[in-house]
Image: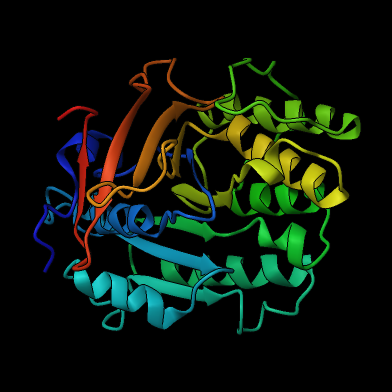
Length: 301
């Protein structure tokens, strides 16, 4: 077991017990860092709610990963005291070597939706948490269009399928400035506007969604190739939908023996308002130990 608390105290209110209903949480990383430790802690908090006797708090997880295999996830979970191999509360969809690896977008969506339905029907949990790890691979590795990926995620989340009207989007400052193709601006506004609909109509398929994407400077700022332009547009669109954005990166000054990187907590386009707790924006440091423990602390402490 790790030497540090499973959920770092500075992140306890952010990661547990569950994100708000219908919300999307965006996790971004760069080449030198990973959001794997964050994803595992979100799953840990979801599977172990404060009151384990309440049926309405029972959660199952559908983990779709285009970056890591099942064994990698099981090993990380084991270090936190979780056993993914027992029971049916965590279902895995392998984006690298499974049925979805060489499939088209419709087949990928069908496989994920079927897995979500099995978790709800067979797993018996009241809520399903969907984790899409490395979904940006679909743009880079399969040539899928940004609109295809976003529409797939929207349909899985069951957002806006039954309502054709749009609410006006609420603008917000992105934590990163990104170029955006002109033909995608209208779609981004449409996806952004759907955040208001979720507050009126509860989600039917998944309770909440976690998305991880790369946010390296070369992919987000240059926009000199179609890959860079499309990647930046995809991450920007997710940021517009997100309630909170958790971004990990290396130290600006280089490497340090007792610091693994910086965690930035930012408010997304759907962050706060209408009775929801406001997302507190901040930057903290973190250290990932070899035993799987993670210490999160303020600068200077």
